Image (cartoon, rainbow, N blue to C red; front, top):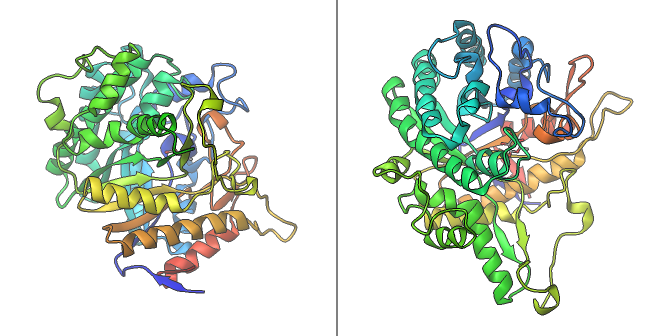
Length: 456
Ligand code: FCB
């Protein structure tokens, strides 16, 4: 067994998001979000769950902060519910919403935990969706006023800001696949939404900096390394396209390259965008999106093995796909593939060279319940986290400026279209009683943090 030590300054964190944990959906003037609306559409959420109550973190946040303190967690990534702050999307500010986050931040600082605030983790005010949502430019403008209000109030205490969480999910799952709120299924709209998300990020960066002395601001993208299922030309091309769709469509414009030409050509060929590219891009937008940031957040869960569906399978030889055995899938159906984390970190470092990187989410869904002794023996999750921390260490050894790691998630919570059927927490939540139990993975993570090292 080798012990791998992380740098002294490494940020050991846990992550959550507002809609997934807060509950208190109708309290203190909170407006309706697209997820409140979407979760009520029959058939959209597998168990018909919603975020009305969730983990009731809105009321139990002190207990949750105390738990983090006990575990020795150094940083907490949470998100701010836009409809709590601006119930009508823009304009009138709801002070009780701001007060909640202010209390949370004070509690964190008192516990010695560094706050990392995400401005947008998918709970768009429904009123803005009624006006076109992320498909229209005015939503990006409204986001900037939201960023302004929030950073003005919290910027004296919160130094680390993430503008958006996973613009791929917000645009593609929300507007192309219809699996997430607002449930639209239209390629053109989804690609336009991706542009407005990125544009609003670029606009918000200087706003955060203006309101926060010593601000560190970035964005969190979910990246997914693709691998061709075979060396055939067809699979290789499918993999190029997957990578363009998932990773490069976001990374290229963020790092000043504009939208990837091969993807614009593919989307144009499919009729999703005009041959000249997205029609919603105005002059200056690409410069805005490429505004330099202080860090890049990477959310990593799994890789994707890509097989072409454009030619008959039989012609797509040789076919040798070496996936991990079935036992190596989490309950989300996502492959356990720690090496993908090293690969994606090294690749982003080489291709885009962010000055600083953070793993802003990584974790696994396993439903292991408490045993008779009250412990939650979630050994699969420990194995997953350990493997990925080793993979993160490898990236550091390879020269990647990786400064921190946030486990998804502190708590079991509302997993979007999967409702409460998926448990990602290192803390068990009994949804009937709201009781929390630190799982064995939480105790394991506490030890890793205390020692600043992980065993290989
Ligand atoms: C990410 C989301 C997060 C959570 C995890 C499992 O895509 O950012 O909210 O749902 O997946």
